[in-house]
Image 1 (spheres, rainbow, N blue to C red):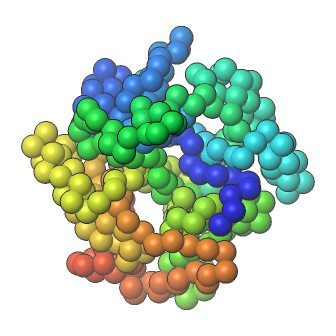
Image 2 (cartoon, rainbow, N blue to C red):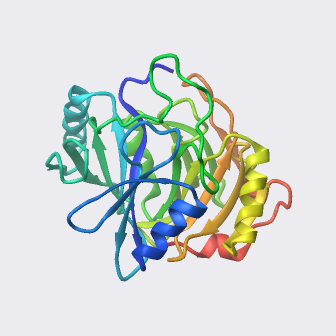
Length: 308
């Protein structure tokens, strides 16, 4: 797929209850790299193979959750065009000045019908992956903890799933890759959308609790490394929700776990390639268990009920 509009998930701002405890968790256990702190006390981090300055921002707050979700777009002209398209669609937008986030250019903010705050941006300082750009090596040394290679996707919940799905498909150019139907066999219970040729970049789930987050996911290269992540979490007494496991949807392998503040994180591996000429997969209500947890074909209660 030629990426000409929205490129990928670029960053997410996560609320944490104890900033020092959270930084230790995200750097020593998850294995992200701290890249800066700003005057308001926010901490910026990135995964080892990411080249831009940051993909995660941690903010101390009195409740866990996610403040906003950022997608990087191709260039400044694309940012302007997408803002024009959003307004024509009836979506109110706001421009945030360059520098409001460290090393980040102007951002266009808007709320999706599910209540979530999204932002688009075109510019962020590129600090590289330590390999260099001339005759690069292939191994990034001194990786700590789980050490995912990138921020991969989000699953978020809200009441107006249809509105958010249509906004992302019709205005932002995302493709529908998979869906789960409600009991009526017609209404979408959940949808998986991509702006790339990944199996998904974001998933929306129908839920009366609008503007809530189920998880942020980070990509791990191999099943072997995913098993190592499980061993490390067990050794470090991390609260694991479920996994290692395989999804029916996306065919990816996964572990779900919680940071010290209760934010759910996924380490994700695999998934198929998607192209715009492909039809989406559809899962029926009675096969939802297999869609999410393919081997056991059953959902655990905490996976369904806990959001932040």
